[in-house]
Picture 1 (cartoon, rainbow, N blue to C red):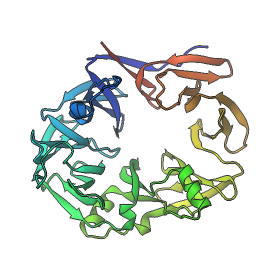
Picture 2 (picture 1 turned 30 degrees about the vertical axis):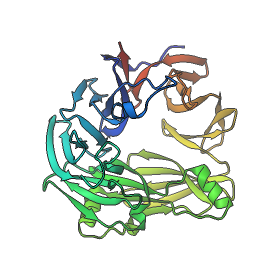
Picture 3 (picture 1 turned 135 degrees about the horizontal axis):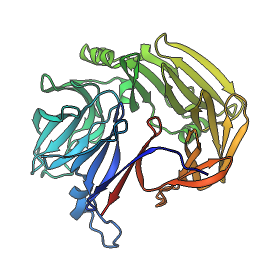
Length: 395
């Protein structure tokens, strides 16, 4: 069986560093973090001795899947602890600290112009001895556009009740605001573009599917919502202290439901909902432009959605395997035995990888009618739309 034809770029990087994919992708550009490599295997490993190496960022690696261009940037500041995520802008915000951890510095970096700017400085010293353990504990940090970022954080010594603010790079300040229950309950934020408009997809409720099922069994309901709002509108609402996003909720899970998966295709969001009481699935199709919603029920519990050549597929997991079905017909396409799990689908077949937690096997395989074959290994990133593979070799 021939291997898929995908453009592969291999780069050589120093062994002294480790590289991790950052939840920051703008168009075809993906960011990776650079930290010092720390061997934690010794039985007498001293966590406190290596705490700065474990948590401080040294730099970033960016890769453009369209051009294959890879560039490396090392921060001129030393103590970088927090990087923003985003899918809406090429602007990265990051937090740095002085050597004694008494001063906080917020910067932004334009990834296209390759320019850094100091946004604001804040004295965070208090009655406690300053250290890496006495800094802002950041819960959410998201770049909204080239000017604004959303941040939620705890101050040193603060135990609960996150502080929320907009970071304004133009005015070089933070705009604090008091969140309502909906904002306080944010689990994750994603960005997407529809017809030239940048949107936020916000999920509230921090419980996973299996946790929500337990909550339902014990009659402990938790709010879980999906919110879609234009970035500019979100910023405007926060600035005017109108943070009630109820008008932008596209679906609220009932206590017997949980969001299982999500696809963003062109102008539509395709959302998979698992229903515990009827042991089946609901697929919600939400059209962003006209805010119309369509629901389709399916008589099985599915875990994940896939899309290839205008056809939707879904998986059902068991203790021994993952089964792949055509969603609309229920026809079983394949059964992948554990520990392999489905990553995605491409023209050449089903892409799988060992999905056991902590597994050192990072080889990708292709399953199709002709059998199974090793596809690629030691890759850092695969962009399936651009048919691009990045490999990082260290020596």
